[in-house]
Amino acid sequence: MKDYDKLIQDLAPRKFGKLGQIWVAFLCVIILLAMYAYYQQIDKGLIITGMRDYALWGIYISNFVFFVAISLVGSLVTAILRLSGLHWSTPLTRISEVIAVAAIMMAGLTIILDMGRPERIYNIFLHGRLQSPIIWDVLVITTYLVISLLLLYYPLLPDFAILKKHFKEKPFLSKIYDKLSLNWKGSEAQEKIYNSAIRTLSVMIIPIAFTIHTVTAWLFATTYRPGWDSSNFGPYFIAGAFVAGAGAVVVLMYVLRKVYHLEEYITDFHFDKMGKLLVLLCLVYLYFNVNEYLVPAYKTTVEEAAHLEGMFTGDFAPLFWSVIILGLILPVIVLIFPKGRKPLPLFIIGLIVVFGAWWKRYLIVSPTLLHPFLPVQGVPEEWHYYHPTLLEWMITFGTLASALLIMTILFRYLPIIPIHETAEEKGFLETHKTEEL
Image (cartoon, rainbow, N blue to C red; front, top):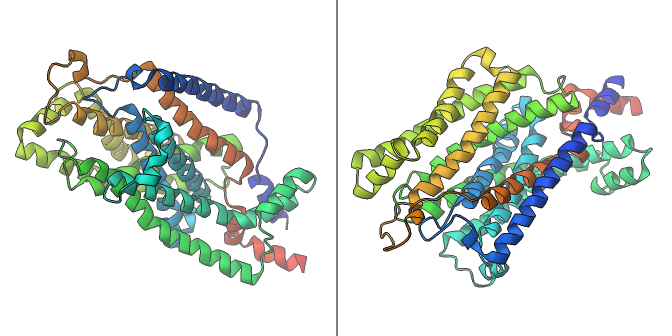
């Protein structure tokens, strides 16, 4: 009984300390600045951004693709590892689910930020055509968000019931957890429905997750533009998304373990496992990168040659090689050694992977647009280049801060590590039920 009580005490949500309050205030300031920047964009139009007739997509769409990529981690850790019966991933499932929900919410918002007339978005739903890949993306993002929310919520039902009792001295909070628990009693019938629902959602989210990344890739690949005209784009996006998502989980694992003192539950063993998984995912993504660049380089059509020259030796070369070497090759070299998979080194590698993943999406979007098949005649020289303005950076940082704020709030009121599942795996539930009888 003492072990069970200690488990609840360790994993129950806690108030923000002074550092947490500063963190929330910092994120709110960034979001407010981004809202002011977006007001300026709405008031004056997209002309105050760096986007022009050549670079009609820019940092916003790069950010959208990044959020979509990060969201795949929910299906990787929560669904695939759960269905595989790998119980070592249990402490990481809630972290992955929260990342997925926050990321996919911000992905949808980022699309609106890129629109010059966002008030017309209702036309997508009223007059959208199923022949358009954009409609496919809207449908699959909406579906993925709903399933991700359910996959976050359902496993929380027994945890809410536990928290209702834990916070009985705080009636308001206890009442909220009681309502959220949907009258969970832990009966055999409830357990059966609960397990069946989670298993069904875990199965459903895998094809939906693969579809959302494939459809996003098709938004690019269904054009004839050099750099996008590729049948490799679907699996290329999925492989890259797994890398970005795994890197995000590693970073949050380390931060949450430090802040909430969860060393007993998120152990070096979990970092070691995630390090090995990250090595595998980086190697797979490297393979798809070789395919993505080697085949066009071998064919060397005029358009592809100009695009690849810009990436390999031109203006984008420093960024391109930094992303490949630091974001993919370096993690493999470091993480194949056991010392590299210790918490701190893995955290640093995770940060590099996440930053590299964001810039990789920038390289997917921006360089291609600067090499159209039919160049616009007589345009100003600066239209041939794309440099995000300060306003675009402010709005982009605002979306990233919003995603972090969503995660922060959810981790404030939800158990970071599933209490019910952890107690069940440790055998505490049977002991607790026996003592109650």
